[in-house]
Length: 114
Length: 117
Image (cartoon, rainbow over all chains, first blue to last red; front, side, top):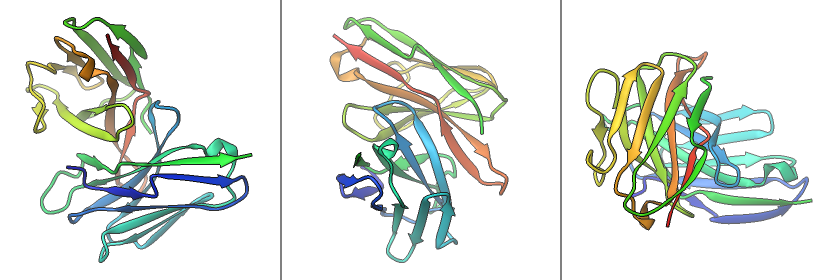
């Protein structure tokens, strides 16, 4: 079964607004990574946050991690039409598991309307 | 980050046939992974392609259906055998790449979109 669950499953916003997507997982982790996928193509790596980190920034992206709640959020500020894509979280490791095998959430489809 | 290419980018195949997907990385990597993404779904790990030894398959995936080769540290192939329409998916390879912080960020190839008729 999937480790992660994203919510919402779909999100539609206007250009310039902020978009927040959430991810929950079930077991302990080493790292959590966020990816973007455009139109069913390959995944673009956005950001990795370690289990001992609480927040990380990269450009217009802000990721938080709450290991006590087993959840993470991805915030995209000042969204653009080009941000329209599916966003996935993926976890690895934990409980003696591999640092490399990723377990993916179901994804959030973000639509940014111009 | 590693540059990863896949061939073919897409294909339409008849049921009962097989398709071999290639994954090429621009640097030597110890581990390569193969994932499947069924329509409208998330990604599921098929197997780990190990150089010099047999691939390690995840639950629900078997070597007879998804044979994998890993002849060197920059290349791997995944074959989808005796295909059925249920095999219609995007198949992606990935490699972990050490970041500047020493973390293993995983990067993905562009994917192969397979449609089985």
